[in-house]
Structures are given as structure tokens and as C-alpha cells.
Amino acid sequence: MDSDMSSIGSPQSWEGRCLQPSNEKELHEAMNLVFDYRGDVTIQLKKGEQVVGFVFDRQEEAPQPYIQLFLPGDQHPRMVLYQDVAGIEFSGQDTAFGRSWEDWAQKWKKSESSS
Amino acid sequence: MSVPVSQMYTVAHYALSQHLRGVKRYPLVMMLEPLFRCNLECAGCGKIQYPDHILNRRLTPEQCLAAADECGAPIVSIPGGEPLIHPEMPAIVEGLVRRKKYVYLCTNAILLERKLQDYTPSKYLTFSIHMDGLKEEHDHAVCRDGVYDVAVKAIKAALAKGFRVTTNTTLFNDAAPARVRRFFDEMMELGVEGMMISPGYSYEKAPDQHSFLSRERTHSLFAQLLAQRKRSWQFNQSPLFLEFLMGKREYECTPWGNPTYNIFGWQRPCYLLQDGYVSTFRELMEETEWERYGSGRHEQCRDCMVHCGYEASAVKDTFSSWGGFFGTVRATLFPNAV
Image 1 (cartoon, rainbow over the protein chains, first blue to last red):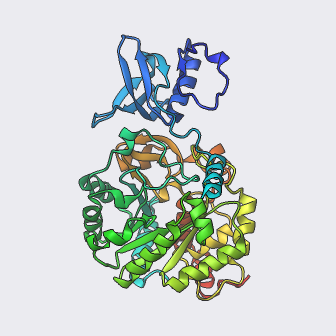
Image 2 (cartoon, rainbow over the protein chains, first blue to last red):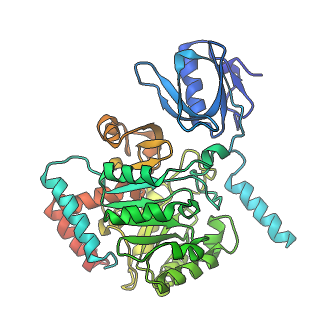
Image 3 (cartoon, rainbow over the protein chains, first blue to last red):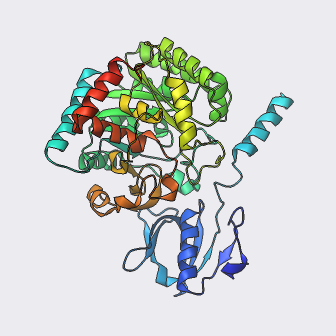
């Protein structure tokens, strides 16, 4: 499990990684990554609760910055304040990863040659 | 002229009214995305990379119609996802047509032929078929063999039933001008009302980041495509926007021109960038810091020349100055004049 943000760099995908931001700057960086991620995440709240869902909104310039998630099965979004976040896990599949044009072209070539 | 006179009149009346009332920012085309689920996985598309529980969400007809009422734009474009997957799409379209909105239902046409019976031909309803080139290029772009043939068959069926049909084409940096010009011939021979073309935009999350166009390449490509334009080619878009693509005009982006509403709410700032959501159209228009976006102001807007940002700029130009108006008349009547 990763926890030190400075040691992570920029992996090809964040899937399976965990972050525990230790200051406000790291928290904002982590929330930007969560907002960009195209899979579900697990947010560990300081009060002990875990929230699992897809982050679709980030309001970092609000007086109290927050994100909004859709939780599987819930009709309405859930709001989580930045200040309540203890840790983040990129727990769901990264749905944008491994779908490059090159990947597809290789698959295309393979199916063409086998047919 | 590919756009019907009644539609041109509606848009002209709307834009002029806004201008005369001194409204600085007004929507022209509402982008309504009732779902993200699609039956294709195109390599250039960044709209469908979501977990299943997000792809399974849909806007209800009531939500769609309330958003259209709130927005007030005279044209509603319904992309997605694939809108024809939505089981309540006929009710959504019917409600919009009842409100006299000009609806462009964007589809890859895989389901179109079998769904045609659910719709009624109307001057307010156009099926806008995703076609990215001739058979080889289109099947390549949509990552599936045979889709071009299915779409052509569906276009013929829709035309035979009296529906308005246009095509919409996204061009990437591998586009061969001669092939694209042949594609224009082929679409017009099919009998479509008009074509819409646009350069691809590098979605932040689109898997294929290498195939998108820089501004210089866009100018060069569209200048080649649209030089010595054939009289038979009809484009269902502003002639000034086409001149912008060719590098003959400069425009600033009008991100509020095509506001986007989807399962997450009203998308800030535009159809292509996701910088957060608000729950009302009023919040979108009044609370978005528009000056942060556009070429030269936002990194992700640098090379964007997509119609959802710039076609509204061209339309505004037409109705806000005599130069723009006469430029539109000239570009419509004499598209090959220098």
C-alpha cells in the first residue's frame, strides 16, 4: 500500500493505489487525482466511515472544498468535505486504462491475421 | 441551403432577440446527454469510461424536459452514449418536439433501423448519424468492422420514411483529404440533408491522445477539404464556422453557447471539459468563471476548434454585425470565393 505521496510519481494507472495526504497541499493534489480517476474510489473518513463510489464533481474553490460521489445503488449524490478525508484508495477498475489506440490496433491486426 | 428555412428563421429570430435585448451570454444548442452507455467503444471517445453503476444511470424524460425548459435554447442536440439505448428516448424526443425544439438525435445508427417505428417524421427531428469517413476509415474509427454498412442501410431506411437525416463527422490527424472529399460525395449521394464536420478534441480522458489535431494542422486539413467545394456538398452548420476551421477567421470560444446537461448536472464549463457540475442552468451561466476558459487562457483549450465552442461564436458574429451578416451571405452563396 502506498501512503507517501511524494514517492508515487505518475504511474500509468492509479488503480489499486492508496494515498494518505499529510497536509493541505497533498490533500488537494489527492482530490484532483480522485476527480480525474475513471473508476470507483474508497474514501476513508476521519470519523471512521468508508464511502465507496464514483467522484464526479470537485469544488475546490468553495469556502469548504468538497467532492461529490455517486454511490452504487443510491439515487442522489453524496457530498464529502475535503477536511473530513483521512485517506483514499483507488479501489475500482480504472476504466480508461489500457484502451489506447495502439492497444486496439494490435487487437485489430491480431483478429485480421487469425481470420 | 441544407438547413430548412423555418429552422434558420427560428435561430435568427432567437439570436437577434438576444442581441437586441443586450444579453451577453445565451445558449444556442443545448447538449443533452441522458446516458453515457454506448454500444460501441471508439478509441477517440472519452465519454464512456465509467464504472457500470454510472453507465446504468439515465435521465428521466421529466429531467430532460425540465432542463430544456430551463435552458431555453432553440436547438437540442442529444449525444451520449448512444441515445437509442435509452428506453424512454421516444418520450424525450416527443416532449422536445412538442416544445418546438429542433432536435438533433446523434446516433451511431446501429439500432436506428429497428427503432424508427418509435419516432414520427417532423421538421423538428433530425437523426444525426455518426460517420467518420468512408467504410475503411469509419470502421477503424469506431473500432468495429461492418458498422459503416449498417449505418448506410439505416440512413436509407430513415430517408425512405421521411425523416431528416444529417451526418456528423469528427476528423483526426490521419484524415486523408482526398478520401474525405470522396466521403462527402458518398453521403450526399445517399441523400442526407447536410453534413456536420469538426476536428477531434483531445479529451483529457480519451484513450487515443496521439490522433488529435493541432490548430495549424486543423487549418491546413480543412483548407484542403473545403477548397473548390462542390455545389452538391451541403453542410448543416454555419458557413463562418467552416471558414474558421480553414483559418480564414479568428474567433474566441463561446463555451456557454452549447451548455451540457447530463446525469451529473450542468457541466462546467462546456461539453468537452469537465471542471465540475452545478444543479441549475442559472448557476452555470451566472457562477461559472468563463474568463478562465478558451484558447490562450486554459491549457486544455489550447488546440480546441470544436463546433461546440466555436459554432456559437460564428452564429453570434452573423447576427451581431453587418460584416458578419454579409460574410455569412457571401460564404453561403459563394463558398469558393477567396
